[in-house]
Length: 306
View 1 (cartoon, rainbow, N blue to C red):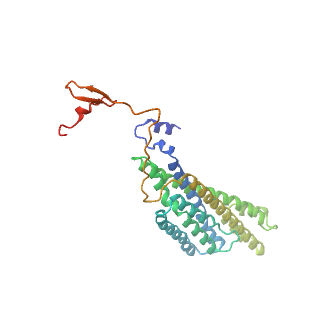
View 2: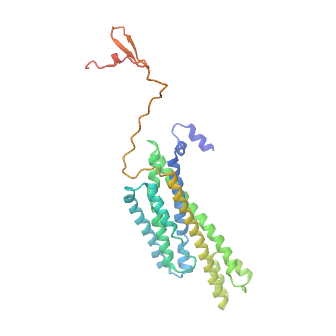
View 3: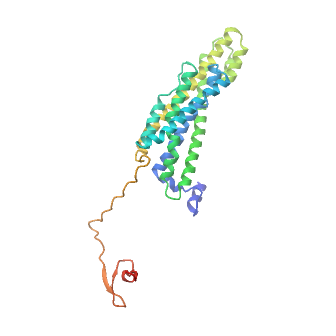
C-alpha cells in the first residue's frame, strides 16, 4: 500500500498504477499469468516421468524434451500469420482450445503419448507468449509503453513460478495419497510413509524390499506419480479452458495486426446547448473583430501577408 501511495504522488513514478485502470491492459496481464501457469507447470514434471516412470535414459529424455520446444516455436511462428486475418482473441482462444485436448494419459502408456500431449499444449498456448506483451503495450498511453512491457514481462515470470509451485504441490499431494492407496498391503507402514515422501525415496525403498514385494512397491510408486502428473495436466487444461472464455469476453475488441485504427465519430452538439454566438466589436484601430469566447482578437492574429 505504501508503494502504491508513493507511486501515485510522485511526478515520474516507477510504475504508473493508472495503467491498471485500462481493461485491455489488465486483461493482457492476467492472460500471460494464467497462460504461463498452464504451460509450464506440467513441463517441469515431464523429465521425472520420462526417466523414472517410463525408464527413459537421461540423454534420450533430454532429446525428447526438445520436441515440445519445437511445438512452441511452430506455434509462435504461425501466430503472426493468423493475426493478420483474425483478431488476437480468436487466435488465442483457438490455441487454448487445442491445448485443452492435450491432457496427459493417466494409464502410464509411455513416453511418446506424454511428449505428444506436451507438444500440442505448447503449440496451442504459444500465441499467449507472442501476443500478450504486445497487447499490454498497445493498450498503454503514449510514453508508457516501456512500463507496460515491463509489467507484462513480470506477469509472464510470475505465471511461470506460480505454475511450477501450484502444479508441483498438487502432484505431490496426489502422489502421497495414491502411494498409501496402491502400496502392497503387506508392506511395512514405515516403508510406505517414506515412499510417500517423494518419487526418489519411493524407488529407494522399493529397492530395499526383497522379491515381489519390492517390485510391487516400485510399480505402486510409478503409478502414483503418473496419477499425480495426470492431475496436474487436468489443471493445466482447466486453466486453458478458462482462458478461452477470458479472452473472448475481455479482449474481443482488439483488432487484427495491421488493421487501420478506427475513425473517431463526430460528437453531436446537444439540442439544448446551441453553438455560442459571436459578438462583433470594434477595436481601437477601427477594425471589426470577433470575440470567440477566449479573448482572442482574430483580426490582430491574422498574418500581415494574408
